Image (cartoon, rainbow, N blue to C red; front, side, top):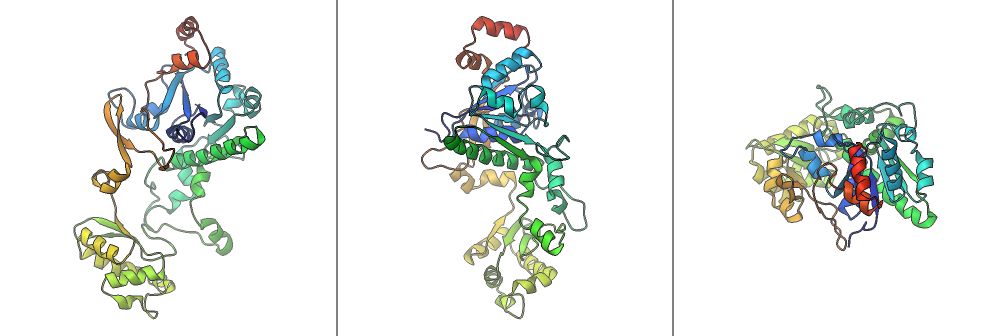
Length: 396
């Protein structure tokens, strides 16, 4: 039994944001029908590191549990098949530029006519409304427009990529999951589906804590601070004696007092020294220097041991090689090895962990069109000779 067993999703998305929403729904039992162009398929198949099977590692990992169906939507027969599919599903996911679905005659009103209970998730760079609605955009543009990239980097350096160039895609995909599940829940009361409208930049902007109220109330424009945090200290990254890096996060005065004791400098937490947060913020350079000197005098394992003994939040900055060696990751199956078309493949596991209806990876990214015949036959009752003709005509 899976949490979303019985939910059918039509994934019309490309690349990552919309499709990642479908991926998460599929991990928890939803039946995902992934529609792709004949011959070339989703561009995600060519995004990332190439493999011997012709598709990238990103495709193999992120298109897990999906049924690949090829449809030529430039052909009226392809659009008719798409309409038939829409009539059978609970959720339609698309992340085309605004207006594309309408040009196909498949805007929200038409979808509601085909299937009044269908939830339509629409993901785009800037949303379905506003002066920017027609502009193209990818995750990197969302990082820029949301304000995130402006904050990433050293104070005297250029803005940098905040970790992953696809961060906005993944975050937006997760907000898409939330929107879809809420719409499905509302459908239980109303009997009708609805439109979920989501912009890439919005999901990133929503995660920037108090940046908006701080500007509105105080006129404060947060600047790049490297690894530091604006309102708490010490809350940064420090290099150890053995040339590794650790993160220390003292989010209040009590945590700093515990760190001072771990440093064998308890007097630093006195009220007339650096104990109050305001004093630390006024002496940011001094605080970081004191903590940095202490961390730099000890190997990483020793620093972490002392912090843990003192109940100070601290952790090593991991590379992917460190992650593969870590017992916490193994215990939680945060990385799992699954069979794929290139053999055993390590991929991110399913989260969150549900006690009674856990998620599952049933298969990794399929070959282009691997499920076309089965879906057309079993779901739409197309005869074998019809399928043969559609394939010969380039419709599938």
